[in-house]
Image: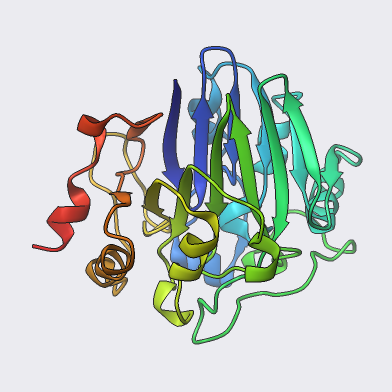
Length: 287
């Protein structure tokens, strides 16, 4: 069995009895005022609390290098010998953090072995138009930058949709509300994680991804207001105007047999999914 926990923004934690794999781990939750106007830095106490009790971290995978996906990565990597997988921009960030050469740099299409039971294929993808109809902070992190830097310095770099295979289960991570259909061809998954933020800015999203990858389960995530603090066990602070009902209705109309999960932050999901484990929040959203 695999326990998967949404940890905030596009962050996911995959746990088996012997290992942990992280995608886009982000625990700092920088407030909006600082994000807009000041330099930002990792919350070391929050990071330590999040990873202290984990089984061996064998892999850390980064879909792109915006701050809500990559800010905490250098701090986590100082605490682990995990395989780090991401873009040239991620390697630049690691170099700025004093750890050059720690990144397995990908351009798209690479398959990277994380352990005997885990591997990831880095599928080239696209970032959704999440900020006033435009992609925020495109381009590469500058090698001339210094840490700490402002959120605008955390450029997206190359964008990937990581396909993680762990203990034979295929998990596809869509960390921003867009994709490149041609790159997804010949890739299928058991579980599809769908970014909610900005979903209605991309035509036919996420239906084209579902058509190609044919998941049995869709998990809606990246809908939290990650500029607000969160205490484990409390409700998830949601982004305004995300129209979760509209997204669920679109998926249900197109693919009525797919299980839809709407997890809360820090709520474990167990895969393979049993019939009594389907989260009822999806149906509640439509009431």
